[in-house]
Length: 334
Image (cartoon, rainbow, N blue to C red):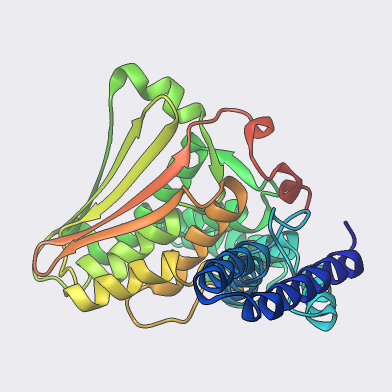
C-alpha cells in the first residue's frame, strides 16, 4: 500500500472514531461508557499503536540502525513529509555505505596516513637491505614484519578472511611489538585440537582480531609493572564461533566498562564507530559495527573486566566457512 493510501486510510479511521465518540455522547450513561471504552481500544489498535511504531522506527534510524527493505508490518508515517524524509535518509545512508565507512576506518586505524603501498614496500625493503648490509639483523627482521603487516592490512582486498589468516596477522603484529617490549610480553593461542581445522577455516571480517589485540597491549599490559600475558582463545559451537582475547593488565572500573558495552548496543551502528575515550572504544566499536552489519545484531563484542586483574573481549560470530552463508552478503560487493 502506497504512503498516500495508508495516510488516507488512517485519516478515515480517525474520522470514524470521532463519529463514534460523538454518537457515544448521545447514548444513556452506561451504554455511553461502554462505547467510549470500545472507541478508546479501537483508537489504540488502529491509530496510536501504528504511530508509536513509526516513532520507534525513526528513533532507531536516528540512533544508527539501518532500515532495510519495505516498511515493517503496522508501520504508519507521522506525516507525508516525515515519510519523504525517511526515504531520503535511506538513499543517502544505506547499509552498504555504513559498512564501507567502517571498513575504511579499520584501515585508517592501522595506518594513519594515506601512503602509496608500493612506495611503502619499496622503502621498507630498502631499509631492510641496508640493515642486513650493516649486520643489523633485528632491524632487518622488524622491517620485514612491518612490510608483511601492511601488505595484509592495505592490499588484501577480501572483506572476509579465514581465522587462520587473521591469526597469522596477529602473530605478525605481536612479533613487531616484541621488539619493543621484549620478554615483558607473551602471547598464547588456545584452541581444542579436535576443532582446530574447522575453526581455522571459519570466515570473519578482516581486521577483527588485531585491533583488539593492539587495544589489549596499549590499554592493558603496557602500563602494567612486570610481564604481560595475552591469550587468544578460540571455540566453536554448532552455530557460533567464539573468540576471547584476554590480558592480565590493569583492567577498568565498572563505570568505564558499562560505558563501552553500552555503546555496542545503545549506539547501534554509529558511522565512524563512536568517539575515542582513551580506553580503546573507537577500535572496539569499529569491529563491533562491522560484525553486526554483516551478520546481524545477535553477534558482536562484549567486554568483561576486573580492575587490577585484566580484561576479556569476547567476539561472537556465526560459525561459517563460506561467504555464501552471510546474512547481508551484498555488503561484500563494496
